[in-house]
Amino acid sequence: MATAAAAAAARGTGARAVAALRSGCRTAARGRSRAGPARSLCTAPGTAPDMKRYLWERYREAKRSTAELVPSIMSNLLNPDAIFSNNEMSLSDIEIYGFDYDYTLVFYSKHLHTLIFNAARDLLINEHRYPVEIRKYEYDPNFAIRGLHYDVQRAVLMKIDAFHYIQLGTVYRGLSVVPDEEVIEMYEGSHVPLEQMSDFYGKSSHGNTMKQFMDIFSLPEMTLLSCVNEYFLKNNIDYEPVHLYKDVKDSIRDVHTKGIMYRAIEADIEKYICYPEQTRAVLAKLADHGKKMFLITNSPSSFVDKGMRYIVGKDWRDLFDVVIVQAEKPNFFNDKRRPFRKVNEKGVLLWDKIYKLQKGQIYKQDLTLKHGWRTGAIIPELRSELRIMNTEQYIQTMTWLQTLTGLLEQMQVHRDAESQLVLQEWKKERKEMREMTKGSFNTQFGSLFRTDQNPTYFLRRLSRFADIYMASLSCLLSYDVSHTFYPRRTPLQHELPAWSDRSPATRLPLLQEAQAK
Image 1 (cartoon, rainbow, N blue to C red):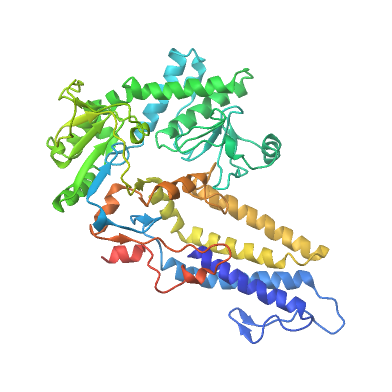
Image 2 (cartoon, rainbow, N blue to C red; image 1 turned 45 degrees about the horizontal axis):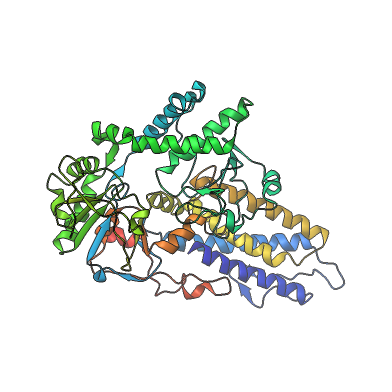
């Protein structure tokens, strides 16, 4: 809402100013504007216009208009516990609910990523013979965000938008930012060709030239990659970036496959698992309304069983019609070669041939799913980002940023030296505000969902593969099981925002409405 309203204000302010220039000494607008009486461009017949004064008057007028918008925006804050839709979807059509385990049914504490980072770092030292000095590096939860790309050949981590453009200022080699000029030289611009980008499953036609980290578990992997790169660079150690990437990847994998993570969580389950009561409430609600449920996870049977006993209780299997462990997703959804196998109480695979899936049993391996599933994504970062976006400082900054951008677009027609100096000042202010808004989310990489103005590559994939998305499973508790989600009509570049964001009929998931219930 802030963006649309600010853009409209900017267009209005800029249009009045350009009209004044083209009409010579006519007033900047007929009548009176919201900002006060109309002003003329010329001071006297035959006198050259004072462009510096004129532009700064337009600037101040735009700033006053923007300030008037902020209170109305502050009264319509978005609800961080809402569910957002990419496609129209009615819950009344959903009779079967399928769940992942990690970060869907179970939400982990901040301690888990530290555990994974430390264990993988120690594997690098003990099994891959990396220098013991890398043990000085500790996990920093504020370094990376999900959705970043890693150039395996060049050993740089970066943020890329939905159109394959690198966001300059977010390219890191080790723990240090790479100067914009060097990035442009490396990539002959800031665009990454399609053939270098990984697909949905992290594969690339050029051997994973660019690896995108989508999973929440990838946060410690990105941080460890950056720390080890940093050590080699700071100590002038010659190394092959491809080997480093593979070694870190293998160490992170071994933390899972060797059971290091599973054993640590099982040994102190209360330390690592958060908010079990919310998952219980969601599953109970769906069961009370007669919905069928299944669980598909890559995690092993005993680990899932202990976690679900903690979250739901010893009879947790009664809630699910089917439970599938060690599914090896994403291949689970398209590999026909591996039949199901039953798993007994001790996690041992049985040899019985499976003719049908029975309620209360646990199975391993795959099933081809071609039934038009509707999908929902759990994005834990969404809640914290919305809370930042709801702050008055962020709203004021973003509203003025959009207005100033519109003003720059309109005033660029003034090519005289005096005007260009003013416009350069505005551009500097715009750049500073962009950096400030980026740092509001993450100092190095900014928001998970946006670059400066475009959607991120992460959001592109989210929009493509998820019908709805939310911060946690508990968001479902706020909605009736027959609720229909309607996506907002997002204005295209050639459309007016009035059709969507400013329409009185638009239904936004507002914070005030949620608090009033």
